[in-house]
Length: 124
Image (cartoon, rainbow, N blue to C red; front, side, top):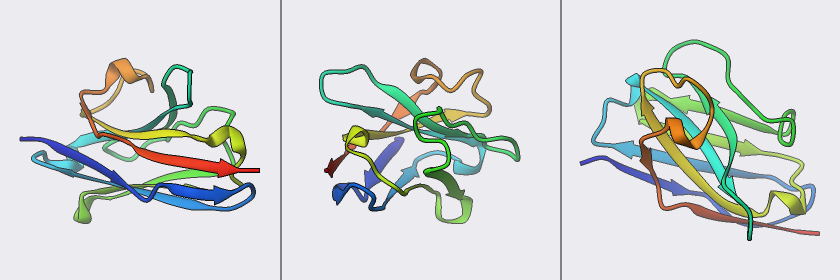
C-alpha cells in the first residue's frame, strides 16, 4: 500500500524559511517523479514544483522561482521543499504527490498518489 506523508509545515514570519519533507513508502521511490502542490484558502490547488525521477529539469512557477527549491534523496525515499523569503501569499495547505516515471506536465492531473497535506502559514 502506497503512503505519502508530508511534514515540516507550521507558522513562519514573512521573509523567513521553512523546509517541508515528504516520505513515500510502498513504492520504488527512485522510479517516481515527485511534486509539491499547494491550495491557498478559497482557491484551487496549484503546482509549486515538480522533479523528475531521473536527471532532468525541475519546474517552478514564477510565483516561487528563486525562492523555493525542490530536491530528493532516493536513499531516504524523501522529497524536500526548501522555502525561503516566504510571503503571506505562500500561506496554503501543501501537498506532496507521486507519479510513476515521467510526468507529461507539472499539473495535479498527472499525479497518482497524494499525501494529506501540511499547513504553512506565513504572517506579515
